[in-house]
Image 1: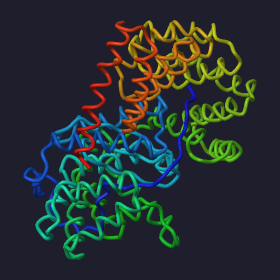
Image 2: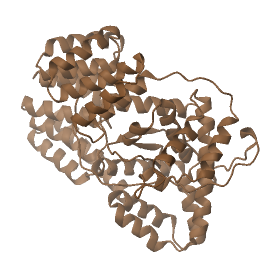
Image 3: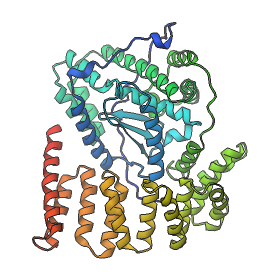
Image 4: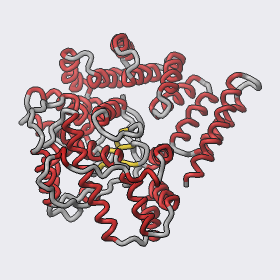
Length: 485
């Protein structure tokens, strides 16, 4: 299923990273816990509130990848790590930003962002998981709040002012960074030492989480080493190396720490390889010819198992460039071998919709939904087909249910808006669009949409009561949001 894209800016919130001192000759179980000293600075509840506000602002400023399959994949990967992490105090949300640069960052409320560029360089799922585990550790140890506490001890700057600067950094990164620099008088060396301890702790806890989750702990030093070697003499290193510098002693630290864990073989993850192929085909920021060239070159040295994901990636490129016969030749045998594989189901849906073959697409998806009735990927694919087949009434029924269960998924609201507008229900379309505005913290537009929708429906009707109640809710949310800035 193919959905909309947005423009880009850059922002880094909690990649608290500088080099770390050498690892002592002690076992990982003997390492001290730094703990979560930020309890007196910001409550967990307040962090969650700030995290929600940041996420809304990111949706309006960053090209977030709203791809159901990739969202399902990174959420599953992240949750498998969180399930084996200590000190988890908030829900977690994992998402992708379309950016070829190699980077990841974490911020309040359990939010972890991954750039799609990571998939270009992480050759295995364990390597990607090592980056995610590191960012999870930043959050479980509340490094951002602790950094604020450290700065507050050294400067007259209040916690509220620092949070305000971070809010500004989300909305306008350049101005936000300037605000932090202009109002912080703490010694540079003090801040460096503090962030070094953060990185050491995040590496240590990240490797432990990797081990508990069944991933290859050696993936972290291996990934770090490859990045360091590749960009050692680059005039402009990727953002990951600017925010997570990799001096030799840090790489040595992670390698020594990984060697203290029992060795075990981790098989290749077919799901990761499919997700990687999907990113390269559609979200890597390269044109179709470059994508096909990469797939062809990689196929020459690929194992039979790896070849399946590479052929899947090629098929996506062929669909997007309307070379349907070539796409079908690759997809049909893949789907026949794994008819319940959602990557293949999604691609077959795209192929059918592109050729206006709606009936077989719906039959295939309904069969899959018989065994996976609540799967978001399948539900969105079915409603996508219904919208494209102009079966708007059926689509609206499904999408109303979906958006109720998944109120922060922009895919559902976007398709619901389209279905309402094409069905002639202007008020419904305005309300769905209003929810999209609210998810981007564009409160005035959200309220204006609902006000207009309320004026379009019958006076005293249930729809009007529902729209008016939502206006009241949005005003409360707007006031709460404004109070955070």
